[in-house]
Length: 344
Image (cartoon, rainbow, N blue to C red; front, top):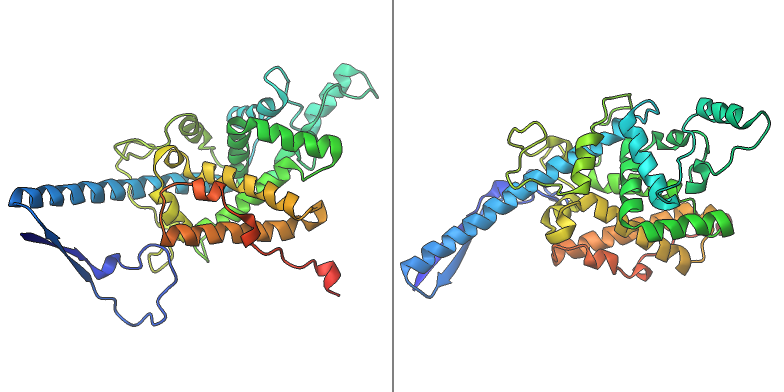
């Protein structure tokens, strides 16, 4: 009978997620686990190798997910440019996945809209639809809605329209034709900001949106295929290192980051994008359950944030390495905040 002693240094404790210790000055001690093995030394060696392989796999997975999330979150500082062909391609993709492959996207700027009016004759209405049909506030300049989320909001909306096209079409048509629900694009931008608030440290170093070179080409290639390489290399081919942008000054990351790191299978290929799709489904459930209207959108959004937070807590205590529990989350667990107009 042999035994293994597994040592977890103090530096590994509390480094990922969770609340800060109540007494920060108190030093954490390491943990030693003793595992008894019934077998020869060969079995012991094989057990050690298996543990090492899993540790290396998770360490590489963590680095890869952190790098991917950092790249995606950097899109918040990228401003949509109608002159950028990559930007035009992604918003056109969103339009065509909802309106149909043969539908031509509307003009993206007031100047382009004016040119169309000249083409179709002075004073006549431009045939077709505009971006307001997808839930943007301005039909002739949808990018004005993206100021709060940058290109990240557009990326996630396009991913949803491409992978959940039937649901996206249903949401758009319900609001456009029957005034049921909420504007699709506006809701997606708000969901983007909600997820960002759960991913970033409490006091991240943020930059004001500026016109930057769009990294969408690399990210879009990844979102259509595998988001992670087996070697864990970064975009420029160098070995990726854990990113500090997701960490607080004491080295912690948000619990949601850790939960996304643990995902396996199909959910692991695009963890943030798939989480976004799940939250859209929960938003719809909350909206129907509470018979909400657009004036109550912020209250429903607060309940949705509680749903995601509760799921993260569940996943933290009992990991499933999947988003299935989020997809099947019982939204009745979350409380809808009181209507401020009725409190008085």
